[in-house]
Amino acid sequence: MSNNEKKTGGWRTNKWIRAAIPALLLHCSIGTVYCWSIFSQEIADHIGFTKGATEWAFSFAIFFLGMSAAFLGNVVEKDIHKSSLIATICFAAGMAGTGFFIWYGGNHTGSLLALIGIYVCYGLIMGIGLGTGYLSPVKTLMLWFSDRKGLATGLAVAGFGAAKAIASPIMQWMLKGLGEGGIYKMFFILAGVYFVMMFIGHLLLKKPDGWHEPTDASQKKSSWSVIKTKPLLNYIGIWLMFYINITCGLALISQEKMIVKCLGLGAFVGIISTVSAIFNAGGRLGLSAWADKMKDRNTIYKIIFIASIALTGLVILTKGILNGADSIILAVLVLALIMIVNAGYGGGFSNVPTLLSDHYGMSNISAIHGITLSAWAFAGLTGNQLATWIVNHFGEEVEIGGNMVNPVGYQTVLYVTIALYIIALLMSFFFVRSPKKDAPKAE
Image 1 (cartoon, rainbow, N blue to C red):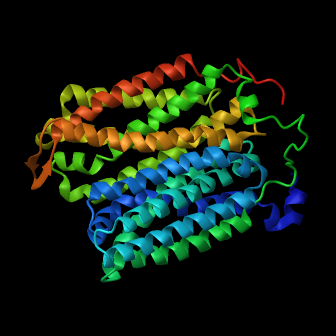
Image 2: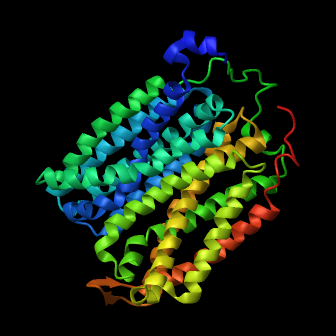
Image 3: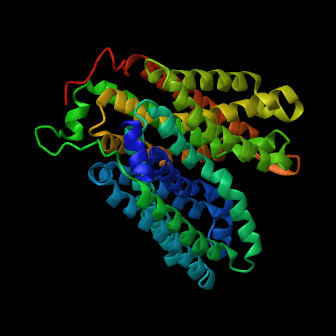
């Protein structure tokens, strides 16, 4: 697009207004799904169930995020306006519905209907909004920022990661400030706020005028046909790398607060959680922008896995979680592991769509990216639950700094994550080939 075209088109052809800003509006809204830990205990107390029972709502949300992205990727491919509108309606409706069932559960303590209603609204309905909302702006960003695809997708996905850091203090303030019933009132208010934000993003989002989706059947291949233009092990490697990175990230991040308490830093949990969220968002933006300068974006995954293996190994060898409360050096080492895993977790997300586009081209990228996000769905069910199972079956709780924690359990989690990281590293070296060495057939 020439400078004259940009000037005459004004805001209608401005890549920041038609791609970057709407992507941030969408991702900063749906990214608040990760604020679940802020209010999960309040929901459990209000409706009369255990925290463990309500935790499944978050797991279902991540599962349906991935599965809706996998099954609705073709909808996103054909019409981003339809998909972004679906995302807006489902996310806001799911949040409002969650508020309704929390209110109902408060008036009918122990009601199974309230619990199932939260599963359906926060898990299924919001999950559909999450999947379609996550996918909708990604291809558009890569089209507008064709020379810096990693920076563009990193910006949006960083918004998803930063949403927790932005929204958490606001939610905590609302829970305290809204008085009795603040938990369900908060959901009603946020449903309205996020609907407005996402609807504006939906209205602004637009692909470049010069881009036309292939409509001829001879030009438009199915996603599976495009994937088969490369050795199948290539795609399997990308999917498994993505799955393992998320699983390991969730396993550690889900225990992050308790690990920090093991270090005797319970008073600083909030600050450390905010810093780790910044690393998460920074990894999404920084690692994807860095990958723009590399010949092969897969190099970023090798860096993520090597750094994660090195720091996890050091914490295992020094028994950092077990001894961190008595050693500043070991405490710093454990905190470094937490930050690196957060950065790698975020960077893994932002580099997936650009890595896929390098291997399989742009024409089917939304659909292929959607299929790949099924890895997120399964990781959402296995990451947290794996760590919880290990902590419940290894070690026992002890008191550190006035908090009951299980250092042996958290340390044991690391043995599993380092093994998985090693498998992922091997995948990145031997399964995922350089796109230049094995370019796809012409589309």
